[in-house]
Image (cartoon, rainbow, N blue to C red):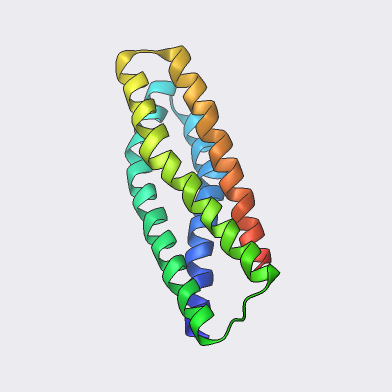
Length: 140
């Protein structure tokens, strides 16, 4: 139970963080602050959130290995869960290694059109990762 509890907690933190960020945090900032101020706050928040996501991904990997080694048997539902978690991790890695640096470079260069395009991609990536997280919960 402990291993499964840790697995579910890591998944809940990752998924809950994404939902809280997109549905509560960002809209509240945009409503309360001017766009440049809100962007600075969000830019300060995201590196910490990314570290939390990286920890959650590592915990999910370790817990998944332990769960399989201790009691799970291979089957289509297990494979679906693993593929879902892998897709979440790949999207997070893409966000960390590709989108975040490009967004920072576009902002620094004053490339509003490039920033807006990359931001749209980041929003889509967040939405896809959230849906995958919901699927991972259903498969757990």
